[in-house]
Amino acid sequence: MAPLDSALVRLLFISLSCYAALNALELAPSDKKYEGIQGDKIVLDCKFILAPEDIGTLDIEWFLVAPDAQQADQMIIAFNGKPYPQDGPLKGRVDFVSPTPEEGDASIIISNLKESDSGTYQCKVKKMPGSQNKKVTLNVYVKPTKTRCYVEGKQEIGHDMNLRCMATEGSSPLSYSWVKVSGLEKLPATATLDATTGMLHVKNASQEHSGTYKCMSKNRVGTDECIVMLNVVPPSNTAGIVAGAIIGTLLFLLVLGVLIFFCCRKQKEKKYEKEIQHEIREDVAPPKSRTSTARSYIGSNIGSNHSSLGSLSPSNIDGYSKARYNHIPSDEMERPPSQVPTYVPPKVAGPNLSRMGAIPVMIPAQNKDGSIV
Image (cartoon, rainbow, N blue to C red; front, side, top):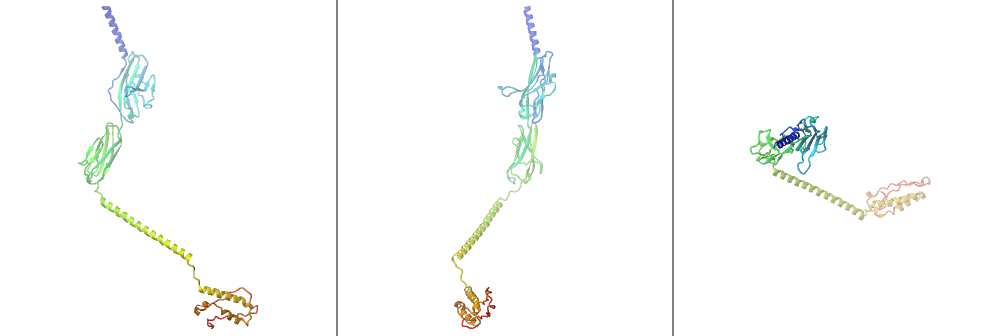
């Protein structure tokens, strides 16, 4: 029995030695909850202690654990004598905190945090024969930003209305609160607040409710706010406005109708005048002037008489003139003496009568009975 007991003790000692060697490398425990704000940076701790038995090459690896067990974890950075950043969602934003991680600090720093960086991260340290790993959880939150306020409903006395508040960006859960910062500086007694949706419902509004209101949106990492003006006024006279609009419309239509009537009438008058002028121009011949006819007759005869004077002698001028005047058209002689036109003999280009021996004689005008005028 002694040799057997001795062998068992020896085997147990060897096993304990191997176990101690394998667990010589230790990682500092941490139950810290890591929470970051979008745009900021955060440090994920991973510190270790080496034992004299750990004589192998130091190997440090950080992984982003896949949310689905069927998918592989994604390495984000490694160290094997020097840092090796990996491609992935944290490329260019992750690095080791210490420039010499081999001295026992494998912590990393993530810059310019994004909400999508939230997840579980695993730190794994190996230095043969020791090997240890631990997991930490990171949650990245977004502060409330671009909070917008507005009034919903008529801002008139006696009406109900809603003051709305909403943050465009921000991680859930978000809560809202309202305060009045002007006037009576207190919320109306009839107002009710929904802190989840940010709606402040005001019943039976009065002028005392007018003023400046401020809404604050809040989550676990930050706050944001906005303001809105509430101006409660007496109800508007809608009946008078409608009546005025109707009267204005009728007046406009009346004026338009009058203008159209006068334009049409003016056009008809122009058209009628054109038709009358056209009929006179085509169908009616201009009347003949008796005076112009007689004048042209006398002028033609007297002109011919003057052209014949060159062949007359002083002895027969008197007889010739009497004989020619007896053939004047009767219609001209029927006129009263006062209407008989006075004839002015034209200057006729012809032979010089004085050179031909003729004597110019003035021929007096005669009435119808032969008497001299």
